[in-house]
Image (cartoon, rainbow, N blue to C red; front, top):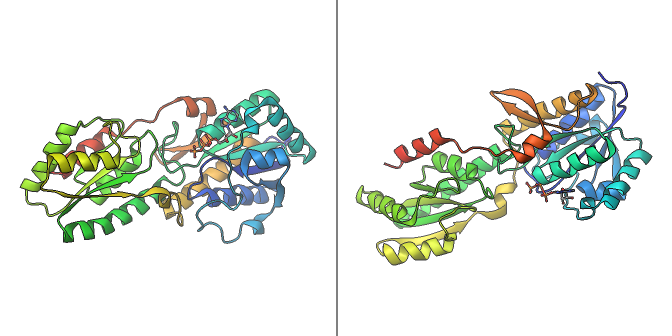
Length: 328
Ligand code: ATP
């Protein structure tokens, strides 16, 4: 272990996701266990620039493992994109005698952390926190599993009303320009059609698929649309398109929105966060830096942050095939 590091700061940045609190708790408790001082930084890079710090011990993180959001708050910070802003942040960290950082966030936060590391040779380790699961170097990001459960629960409810009225529902889910939430939740909720950015199904095939579904005697249909879908139409335009071309359907739209980012984290996300927090602190104390903690084959891994930012996650082709078979 590298004895130079005596004080570690942890913060959350960018969009929040369920499991961030469990990760904060893990970093704080690991520091306490290893007798390293720990500081929480409020509001991400903005709080770093303003010196919004709070010492944290094992008891500061009681009863947060089950809470959604982040107790340290999150923020976007334009000042951190400038050398002057980062210089101020560096001065604040030095004044507080902070030796290393654990950043919990998405690729934007990692980019900021990587630039900061290069400019000041300041040790940083990243923990991927985003519901979108769009970060290279980890099979799961914190919050993805919880978001899937939230989406599946919502679609189950929509299905109840859809089947009572023989309706077709378009349900838009989050995921930015990747379809991981749509594909996984779509299979989990038994959607008839799943539209994801990685596969352009085409509007003709969508109509064919819906016709087949109707013909086979289904009383309701659910089409999951990832927000970044590349069919060229948004979810409301898709509704109009289908109404025009398939008037047999009574079509409704549901945009799930920010409810997908909230809620108590699933057991999987809590366990993952706990494991990632331990690894982040241990990696720093081993003298490692500029790495992101991830998980692959149920083993905790470390990937260079630069790769995590630049790499692209791949959609699971096998799951696409399964979804096609299931919609028979
Ligand atoms: P989400 O998954 O919700 O988008 P994120 O971490 O990617 O989370 P961003 O808003 O992209 O969220 O980034 C968070 C913050 O990271 C920014 O507000 C900014 O302070 C910092 N940041 C992002 N990109 C850079 C950059 N190129 N240089 C310096 N700082 C950056």
